[in-house]
Length: 579
Image (cartoon, rainbow, N blue to C red; front, side, top):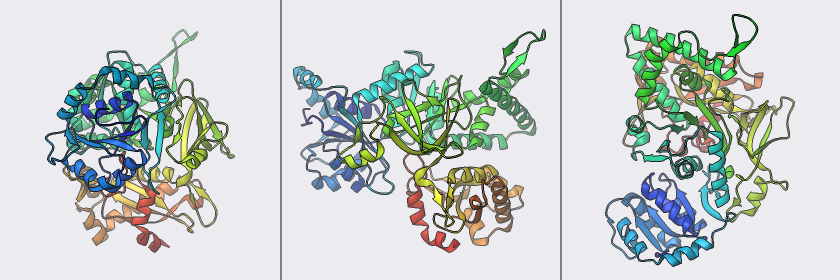
């Protein structure tokens, strides 16, 4: 307010998760402004669009690098009045650029009576938060979230989960510009009286494993790519273990998988008298497996006191879920979107199914629109978590919310009893030249399950005669830049040796057309094709790319989801060559 924040104007926050990020977010809301998170990976032009669209008065930036982005586009931001740098000293000494300490001193000078006046203007149905969508096919849309959206959703999630007020520990590391991270790290933390810990900025590069062991969170949310990396790390350690340790781990995992599936399915076992039954979920030797393996793995990962390990934001492979289940670490799926203030369905320890995104939260409704013969329809949502609309684009709002108030997700799903299963996404559906509609995700998952060396694969073939696939291999990541290297991971190189190839780099495989690797990949794709729902759903051609997908490369979004239109554009020449 002291810097000139006007009601219903934006406070842009550009930086990694930190106490200052959280404080800026809440301060903007309490001052009747609008909190606007901006991804640190955004270009200066992308930052300018968000700041201008949200009528941002104040920009809160983490450091000199982010400051430079705003200074580069400052002249195009007519509403911008001040910039605050919250980490370190301000390198650029110019009017209206302040340090965090200077901001605190100025705030202390503001009479509390003025703050109370602003608070009186706040009401539940007013916008307090803007979440900008990724904008893979154009400019991002500003999702308007109200005070009621936030408080109601946080309260309902707390009702649906085993949260104990004052006894929870949360680790903040996923971008707070994303709705899932913001709901869990800020609003759920406040609602549950939880302790919040902030990871280091290099969490996704290298330090997350160390921080997890330090914090030992009771709730942990990871996007699928995070869980895949955890699985890879466990497998790498296992690969380097002694033969005896490997045998014990293999046995324990079989016990863990069987026990957790029994618990998930609510299996029963007849009593000796035959007159009644009791619920059972743990095989006879479960305590032994728990002592020898499960407890040690959970402790090593920092998940020994975690009540709920969660995944959201993108589809996750069944192979990943089963692997974690075998170690007695069930990873529970949540489904929702920015437009539903985050979660719409949730899986909980006593009610979950592998492959399902869970059941409706209390107080929300799910409708399947235009259901086909297999029970698949567009997932539509209704409830107090549904957003207000898109900022300044009422036509887009009308496309998303129909006249009966149902939010159309664009996802295709089906229901089995109370459980929702996501089977595809309308925008991702491939329509072949023969007119057949094909969802790419099940095909990609089938190929990944057959090929441990594959990092990413993407099916293409829209309006084409047949399907083809782009494949990337698992490689080491440069910890400083997050860019993929050419060197295969330890597990990937080991897999190559198992099929008779001594290659250690992607370029060797591609440039030399490594016969053993190429044959193994073709055999795996043939196996995956056996699971195809139709002839048209089989992959007929494929190619290995020289570089894995990454956030710096632009192929992955901030939550590590593949940005299909961008990948398609980047490799259009290669895709055309398939046909």
